[in-house]
Image (cartoon, rainbow, N blue to C red; front, side, top):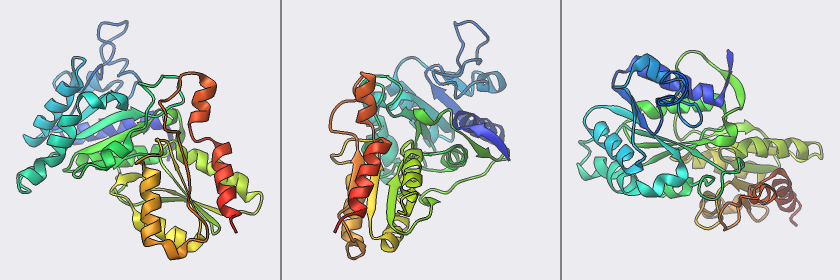
Length: 336
């Protein structure tokens, strides 16, 4: 099995699906890349290089650079999806979704329902999420709770290169709109990724590490941090099970509840603010459906309810970091 980065895995998934299915197209700002800059068109592939080389292979009819208009991107993708295409639309940073949210939650997410199940909307919206790269408050948010609460949307958060490829292929082949959220901090992560196409199913959590004393539930870039803390706690004899749900909608509730039934303790690590976030949602679900399994109060490690700071020291403290995760874990484990 080949070693690939998270970025390369995404690029490979796009390339293989475009070769397999001529209805798959890419729409977004600078997705061709290089146009008007030094080098050939297609040589850059967007702000993070995720679509590099696709324009060269598939041409301007399937890799469409757009004006700086998120409303136009998502409006065009929604229309293309209901008329037989499988568009992959890119919103450069998730922070820009406010410009086109009506097209997402009030149109694409509702087409199947509004047309009595007769309409399909096989579109993927790829977007970069997360803090840690000094992008400031308008380029660093993690807004998966906003999409997760919308009926009709599927929300995906891959935490490693293998899942990035397999989940993106599943997203492209799905007949419903999918929000595919890529953690910027993970773009350089390496892992084993098959060369051939494969699918990772939605709604099936990944048990990244098995344990018996405490359950961690973490999303996206928080999964590697949870694993780091789990390893540190193991040195002190605390066995931590780490669950990566992979998708927030659908959410694999059974995997979480089964783990809590085994460990009796839960800490949720989520890179979004605490109010109305995924940590609060999962805590509520476990309190409702798994209360008798709990031996301690549920721990939550989230960002504070503030905009993302620009100062590096404040931004590092803003994000759930290993120190904060370990403190929460020890408090839950030591509860009497």
